[in-house]
Length: 357
Image 1 (cartoon, one colour):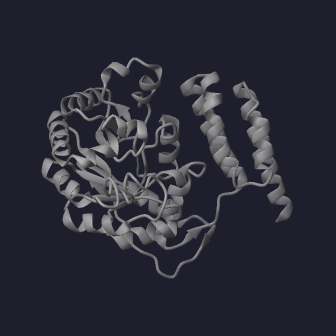
Image 2: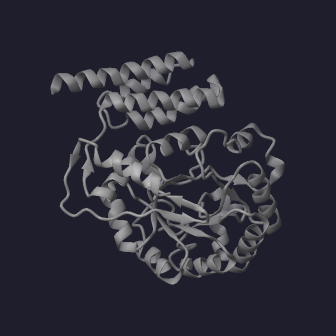
């Protein structure tokens, strides 16, 4: 999509607030099937976080792709309100990537087919979730212990749908069983079109150092695109991980919570070598209010207000008086009150910034 690349170049190169780096590096789009994804900085699927309102905001603020929250392959669960909302992709920019979770090849194939009928344009398979509940059902990262079953699931899903299939994994089950390279080769052989790798084992959870060396080894052994994931929390870190691993893109998870503009910052740095200054409170306030309004509309006022609280905790965490703001806004029960308190908080920050200038 050269026209999109050109637009991004114009937006990023004309931004006035930047810190110069004398060593700019080139950046390229990443291809998944017919989709050219730019910039190569993607939102990771996160249960309870990467819902439709957050995905849309991240895409608007620069993410080249935003993968949905995981959807169970057990279609008996699809009648719940929670799953129905996860299956709702109305108004999302293309391509719409939907992640499915399960351990039965036939059920996974059927779930993939039904999601494509509902508008999914990429099917992503979860073999990386470390949660005890998921692994206890022999799904998520637990599948890495059974390479034969991995192959059967991938073969079934790829054969069931006419859209690209991608896979998200970890480097292995534990430090004694790091079989990420073997899983990657199975993925390529069965027709998976791209692979996202979190650089930790299931046993590591989200703690300890990220094993970027295994991501590099995977990239060297397969020809499909590889997406590096794990502790990428700044533009400089994104550049370093891309250089160290040879990966085609990076995937951002926890670092995007409360900071969805990180994708814009990463794209700018990768394209120009310049680091943008942090956005002003006034600008952040606009994005936060937009996010809250989307949550209220998507979930309904009561649920939307409740779900928004965790996002407001992340948005306010870096700021002085953030704790006092959270204490007030968490007592709000109505959307109008939550919006008013949030607007007041960021307007006050903007006024303080003006006075200090």
